[in-house]
Amino acid sequence: MRNPVGPMLVLVTVMLSGLGCASKEPVETFTPSRVTRGVGVRQEGPLAGYHRFTIDDIRLVTAPDVAMDPQAERQVIEQLRRELVVRLADDYEVVAPPGAGVLRLGIRVLGVRPGPAFGLADATMESLVTDSVTGQRLLTIRDRRSQRGYVDRSLVSDWENARNVMQSWADVVDKEIEGASR
Image 1 (cartoon, rainbow, N blue to C red):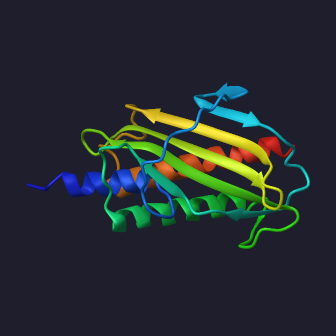
Image 2: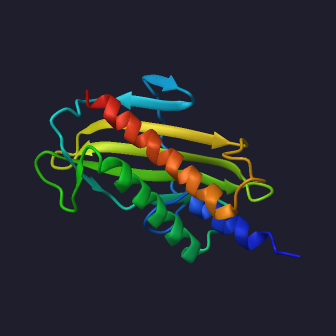
């Protein structure tokens, strides 16, 4: 019989990525100006005129009693970063250094808690878009997932399920950035 603990940790880690190590930092208060399909968005400045992006390290913030496997966490973070680059590259040049006309994208996945059957009990993905020079906050996106399935687990493998979640979050970020840029 297969041990469910290892795949569950890999799946949750893959689903809820971040570049860097898991931490226990507090979740800040967020009041969206609009909510669409469970995704809260607050736009605080214009994104028009920006054509380049830099992506900060993605951070994973676990629930206080949750420990993540570092290797699985790295895989998840790398996958989410790849998904973001693919989506943003359609409209933006993704660059490393900050500079004039460059947006900075920071991503945190907060309150990660695995659920039964390789699922997810709770997690929140937060994206913060700022001007890379001034640090001015331009757009905040928050999507909370709690005890709801991402895909039908009987139809896909654990890795496919995790990839679907990362693709979904990358799509949310891309869609909201595109909408705010108009």
